[in-house]
Length: 283
Length: 108
Image 1 (cartoon, rainbow over the protein chains, first blue to last red):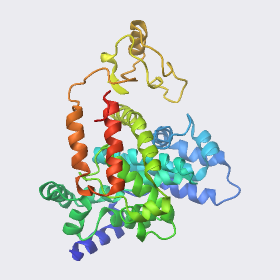
Image 2: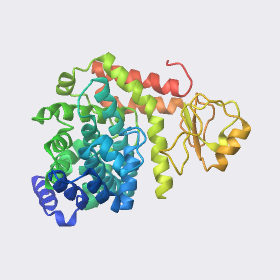
Image 3: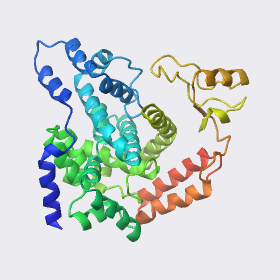
Image 4: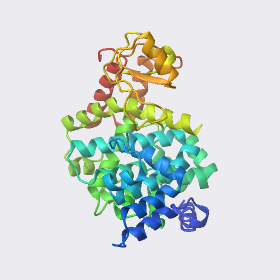
């Protein structure tokens, strides 16, 4: 099984055949390090790609981010900051791949983004937008497995159904690795910051997380909450157990979990509505 | 609350969410939450290209929608591998109550 794991790792390393991080993110990185660059110049770069900027604005106004009505890229830059706009551009690009290939997973990810936002607000944690992005991208490993290992991905689904097992256990049995590790490899190959890589790579094993354990724990809980609500479909028919490490790091108790679940229950209809609108617009 | 196609909207249903123009979702809302629908308002919303509304309660059974009984069975199945874990049992109970309320019924 470890042979299969190494094969997957090699393919991820050979990034030429994988969806690449949009060039705009690279340009924004370079410009934001230059003190002389104005926000207007950076906004012009994003606005020049009309399709991408439209998708980015839709995502900014989606329930996953939940920003107040933002209608232009310049507004987004000024109100949200460069880092948030970069993460929005990135999420928009990756979401397009998901939307076209794995709709159930797209809705699951959208829902996880909303759940992460709710958790962060309820617990008064900082850097909410970054955590939303991590939650939106947490299952990116599944997208790559679906795109690059189509037969194996289909076999995973069959094994899960036949043996009524957790998706992750099936991945370990068939592939010798899981989507979290694969997603972590991909995020690393894209040079994403550790605050995104760790929650993606460790969202099924919070105790493995190093410097970003709180963010990882939020994504872990968001994933479980949206699975519990059965919104979208991640490929996993069973809700995983809340890990003691996540419960401890976030200080979760019944009252907090109940508050988060109730607010999520109230927001599900908004997420569904947003998803339907996106499908109608794109269809 | 329930998301319904506008074709199923009826006078006296109450909006649970504001309605925005589909061609300008970032613009000001056309109708606010809490507003009761009337026949002329429904006609005007249809003319504006609104395709769905979110209304209070669960006033219509939409074709293909699962019954509460089926949804509760599915909830039991989803949580079947973590039965006996106190926090997970609590979470299941919370989602059971949310499901029942969303269908306009009391939790058993």
